[in-house]
Length: 383
Image 1 (spheres, rainbow, N blue to C red):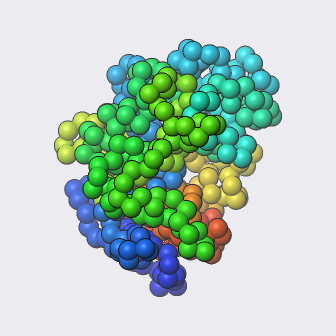
Image 2: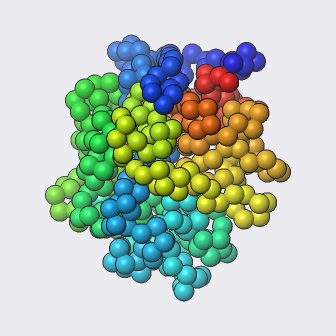
Image 3: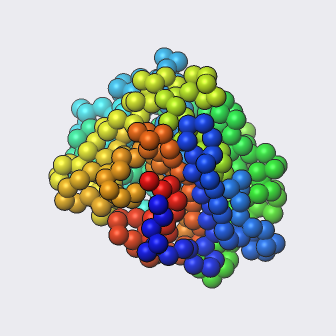
């Protein structure tokens, strides 16, 4: 039941939500404008930059390659990358996909070091000792880091010889029937025309003011401003298409990803991933014990392979978003004034996908480590 104490989003905050079960949509709603210039209202069919929920979708692609025998979660990724990836403080400790997917690789963000322009390489970025936690060896400590996912994308690219945006379309988006894409590069004209524009506090467009057309450059351009992707060598810069957060997808399409988790890897009664792969993704690789990781003020306390798990009881954990200790798996997103979530209750066979855009830099905080607007949206799931 929705908690009446939580206020609805204020004017200017655009939002949409879909409650679903294993078979379909139970309820949905939306409010606000997708495009202030035209007055177009937001709908659950409109694609939005969903931020870090993108990581869950990348993990689905990784697990498909694992099932094909092309990747191994516990193999040193250096062999796939073609160069030696090591934390300089722990040169004898390999880094694996399992560590990268679960943020236990010892790779860390330094500002926006996960944004690597065209013409530069991820190898050069990871040659900088500041890209690593010198105090904890790989596999022993959780530190949420966006930079893990460009490394994963680089491994995927070099393994297959395919550019990440096209590869994830082939592995995940097309098989699931999703009109979604990373950095708008492979979305349909229809999706481009329904983009949710993201705004600064002063009302100026911050991202995705497309006016029905794809961006001139779907990646961060080269230093000279050019955007010629024809010479790009897959595997050299998996950051280009923002695997850590660049997925554009509607809430109705995001529901299909949630149903995949509820249906143990089956899509429309056909196998997409094995039940064992879904179990591997949603099983905790890390659980906060008071000293084995950073929680971001209690926001992260348990993590699988590209998947957050809620909640963990105990000091330091404040992530019981749905209340009452209700067990949920999925992922949250937070970037460019968007707060988003995809969460499923596998015991009860239900889930919710939502976003709220144009929240400002510091929206009101809630009873948990989440913001009020996220708690309001989570309340739509009910009991």
